[in-house]
Length: 293
Image 1 (cartoon, rainbow, N blue to C red):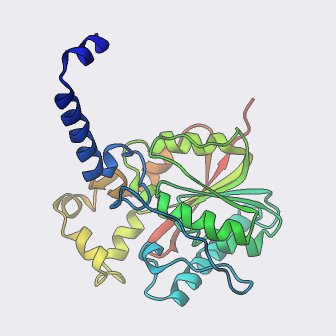
Image 2: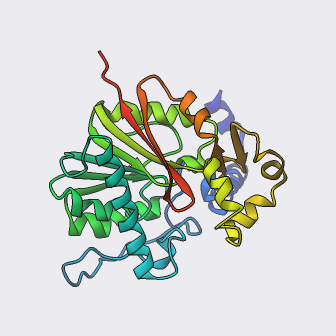
């Protein structure tokens, strides 16, 4: 049927159809790749130039890749180091340790803001970072992997699938990612549980009831807190909820009551600890992969 239509359509119509398809694709790059954020989204062609490396330290990403973590380089670096140190402390209190891990994954690594500091605590570990933002990952590959070959990166998608074998990692951590996953959070928890070895740790940060209290107290004048407090769904439900979702897709803001999040965990994961304020106004939840047959 397709071959017949090709013969019947005049050449001018075929050219018009092809031109229309190109126009749609070029005007909306996400039309083709909606499941992740492509690099250089506003361009339909681009070139990567060689990087020039100076000094022995890890390169610093450009400000547009900081994902709003700090107004300057010092804050960007120190905040990541502080949050990794807090994660390490929480893991050690659970009877495990970051130092002895052999493989670590940062799920939603952006430009490696936290992962770069894991190198200091686990210098022999194989480190991986994944993210749906291809521009962040490209920067990490071009800069961090070249500087530190034990750090590897890959662009993934919104679909809950990771390109790793079962039981591959000792630790998976994720800072402010489950704050943006609303409908498929259990599926992603199952996938992260799959790549964890038995007794491995999963460290995630979430908006919860502690965040709600912080938004009305010490973060009352914070611009993001102002934006959330003004939303009618949040305002009318913040004192009585299991989960609140503001916006949809990867730009959503998701709030969990901690007891609800604990109740909906997939059976492969065990709730270990809950630490309010471990990640700014977000709480940290530490989970353990249970032994399986």
